[in-house]
Length: 209
Length: 431
Ligand SMILES: Cc1cc2nc3c(=O)[nH]c(=O)nc-3n(C[C@H](O)[C@H](O)[C@H](O)COP(=O)(O)OP(=O)(O)OC[C@H]3O[C@@H](n4cnc5c(N)ncnc54)[C@H](O)[C@@H]3O)c2cc1C
Figure 1 (spheres, protein in one colour):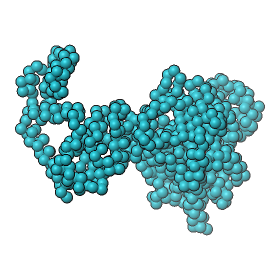
Figure 2: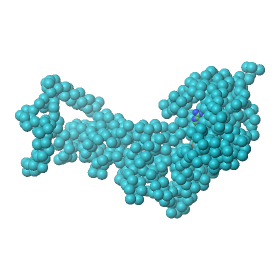
Figure 3: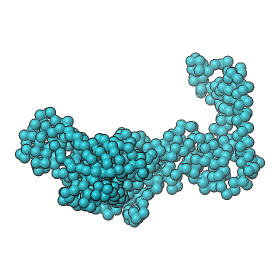
Figure 4: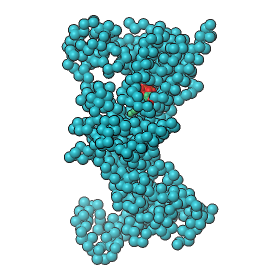
């Protein structure tokens, strides 16, 4: 268990809902769920998840901390927003899903080898480097995420799409050398750092309060 | 010309549904002068389009008949149909109301023999049946429905100036058709106003995932009521719009439009009871071969209605699924609507076909803020609030809130008493 995880268990012993409200983005909306189930029924990937949003929200209220935070369901959300537009209470379900994923990551509870979590990390690292996504490197990273052999296979499979993107100037081969960046890269990175500091300070304050 | 005598001791009632009728009769029977203004060609409002009432399962026609007789017998009550209040100014004890009356083209000589209807060919949408079934259309000369009060035919204004109108006139043996009839505008002085313009069903097509506008066998609860009427659009048979097959496996979807921030925020309060009641229609028609499934978020059978809920629960042919249906698709081969969602008791994913789907449609106020001719406080749901600043304008029934008949009538009686107090004060002041 990570130190933060141990501290949080101690602090919110009796109420996981309070923990979610205080630490998860949009977490204070969880109590507004009336368990109608429209989100779960509307999710295009719903049948592939172990815990639908509606179920996760009920589990939060039931105090099933370990099961929720180590669930891989919130990592499966593709941000299609079907649930948000249909929710009769306008609960920002998509945001809560991402909030839960990010909190679980902070606590070190992401299931081992979770593919979307892995990819999200690649995406983040790629993005903060230059303030712009480097499509070429991100693509290669993704293909080779699970080893060299699989990477070669996927690269060959995706070859035509890659060439198409090059031809229509949607991707440049020069990206392999550094790649393009935002105008004020230092400013951008300072901003991200500051945001992370604020977020960490907030959560640590909750932990120690 | 329509002669109406009104003074500032007169009470104006707007809307002649069960609430407006009740308010008007209570005041008239107390000896007050009352003018009732009703937009449609007949009084009774939406209950005339219901088959049975919960919780007693008696027929609305029974109570309506009593009220119609009370109305006929009371000289204090003047009823104006096809009429609307188009302007309202003044203050408590002294209002001026402009009432616009559309021509009916039929006068009081009418005996409701129906010869005019037989004579004309022109047909129009039958709003009484919500455009449903074999009786989608009605003739251009028509009685709105069998028990309509007044029992006077109406000519559709779209028919005036056509040959059909002349045919209707020629067919009438009683000299009751007057094609020269014009719109009239009356200016009435009155002391207090009871606003009882009621409700209308929420537009089901706006709930896109349920496909009301795409799937023939998805209908609304108000249409389902019409199907049970022996003289209604299907001759009293529960059949599917797509193929006329008996609808023996019926799904009811609760909160269709209500309790939903994308549609109506409020709970319409009557829909749970309406669906529980309508499940008894399925049993009444098909006995044990009729099945009802009610998809719900919570069943809200308020206070003493719990007994009714218990009774329906005990019926083995009615099942309950705790889930707001996510969407409906159509099985093209069978015409069956397929309901998709996840239930809350066990989180099972379902894809369930039924013969027919009834959307328990929400109630919204029939009049929006822009439609109100004077100044009045209206809440975020569109209903009229009780407020000092309304002066002597009192809302009754579903103009005030989403209510069942019992509560609408209570609200109407209360509004009537408030209006009576106002005109009593006026009378006292004038000695
Ligand atoms: C599917 C369904 C089933 C139901 N079943 C039951 C049941 O079994 N038991 C029960 O208790 N309740 C039932 N209800 C509720 C019931 O219909 C209402 O409580 C009742 O109709 C309220 O009456 P009202 O007079 O307030 O409104 P309305 O019936 O809407 O009457 C309003 C009247 O005002 C008129 N009007 C509108 N605007 C104007 C205007 N600008 N000027 C003049 N006149 C105007 C209208 O033409 C109408 O005649 C049901 C509702 C639904 C949707």
